[in-house]
Image (cartoon, rainbow, N blue to C red; front, top):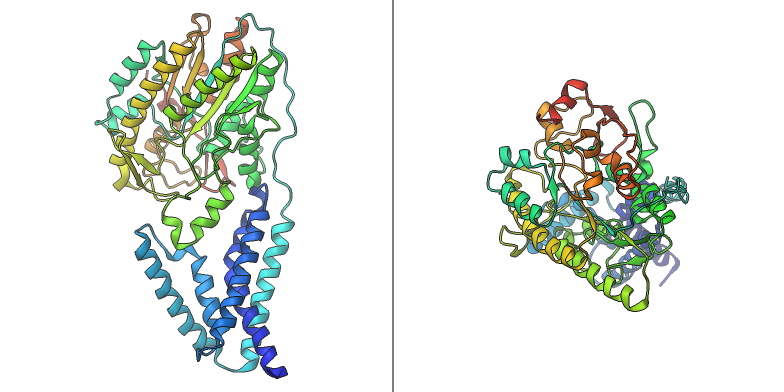
Length: 500
């Protein structure tokens, strides 16, 4: 091989490797502030580049012209899932091959076979990768809080506290009006038999999970129309607060509580952080981080869930709780427990039919289309069955427990996510929320402010101390989907959230 041939090999390898990793570098550059550990993106890019280089060397032994462009075109489209919609794996793979061939034809027409033009492509692709790499390493640290300290509570009782956040579960009146196949009366009656009171006036304060849940755990508004939070790092912020670094857990620790964390399992949301959690209920289930799911979703395989994930539901969480209680008793750990579980249900993907038969429909981003409304209703019906069965077992094992069944927001059907332009129906769907609680009689109340998410920590402090709190007023804020714009819900729309 002469010098010219060696240079062409280098050029082809650079073109193929750079083109293949561009989508991964774009993922890194646009999400670095929300990814706590970017090493998985870098590792995937390195492996992809090596594979592309090896394929180029193999293809060069054939009669294929411009092997760098050919391999790069197929590598690029493999990691560019915007070309692929939901559908069977075979169809998505076939579409990738078609798009790869189209890209090859287009590149050959645009670039031609001249040496200079092909070296120019190598230079441009290398520059794109370099710029994305720089952006991915200079986006700043995630805006997660430092370790939280909170005022102590002088508890007169210390029951175990279990908080279940049921993602996207609507308020009963919304189900009656929009999803008549869901029997909310039967649900409320079943839960009442276990000591629960189901609210008809519950609300949340933010339209998105990643600010709604921190508002509950920090006991304060996280962003307002006047003083927006730096939302570029909202994923990292929510992950750390959900992991146990929050004022609610800190408050309960002053009363001697131990914190137990249950991972979501779906999309790798909110993994257990052992630096804050005393016990990870399902942290050894090989649940992959959200970053792995994001990379997986870039490929043609992204139409199916990441195979390492084990999504949780009320039944599996209570199984873990009961096993952990038995283990704590054997080890002599007598500390009271506060447990937090975020369950991706009835939020898509729709894993269960109305009879809790296994299924999987809908991936992130496409599950709120109107065609999925009945699947959402069916998964809700299954969820209510799971709650009835699991709460019966939990209360039988821990009859003095405080249990909160809450949602982080309502449904999303028909919402366009333009702050300040939400219709009355949009506001009512998203900000009315599910709340069914099992509390001591001393802290049960119909006070509307006690039924909004931002006041959960105050409610629990009241239950432990018998000292009535100073409630925060209930205010709602809409956000666009990427969170960088907020707008206060007008008073006339907020008034629609209380049906009384």
